[in-house]
Image (cartoon, rainbow, N blue to C red; front, side, top):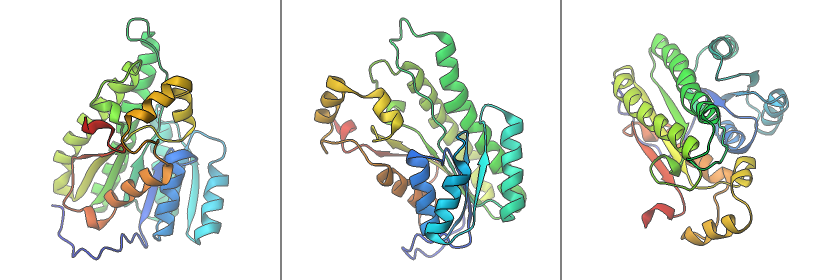
Amino acid sequence: MIQYQKVAGDFDLTGQAAIVVGGAGGIGEATARMYAKKGAKVAIADMKDTVDEVAASIAEDYGVETLGVRCDVTDQRSVDAMVSDVVEAFGEINVLAAMPGYVHLDPAASIDISTVEKHINVNAVGVFRVCQAVANQMIAQGKGGKIVCVTSQADFIAINEHVGYTMSKAAVVGMIKVCALEWAEFGINVNGVAPTVVNTYMGEKAWQGEVKENMIRAIPAHRFAETDEIAAAVLFLSCAEANMITGEDLVVDGGFTIY
């Protein structure tokens, strides 16, 4: 059961132990900083060599306990080791933000199947692998928890040359719904945040030149999102204020999908 808790409106995570998978840059680092600002202990899990550096920077900036952990979401042993390291360091896990990401754009008629499989392996199976491992830890703890996955507006609309990415993100939405249904009895909320294009390395990789200009014109807000705007939505779904929300995919797209 997901318990009722009087809504204070503070979005406070003091004393909570959080993992941000993909936290060494972009939306992930912005989320980790949001968590730290609200008092959480934060583990930065990422493939990047800079995990320790990012963790140290956040600890210095916000005065919270942090941990940097190298993690490959396509490797079960790596994920299990990461969860074990976080539990050893923090004692428990209360919040997971899962946002590992891979994108490579090709037309559906010519995209290599191995590229599609990589999208699925990282963005879908990899995300589930992390969610499953953390959820089992939360269930064992008996205190519930919050799981938030970063999905995409591409999980429910068609975007040119995004077939592999769209397949993977749509799979995550299905996963969110099933996990939210099954894990509610353990007090675990599972949700997604679906951004429009975000000003990150991946965003720049996918959107350049005339294609970028046309996309910006199509967004009523007339710009791409910034990382902290997406992190704010992730923060909301990670707090007690969102206890009555589960199995949802919160769209943060500047109005792009209202057409």
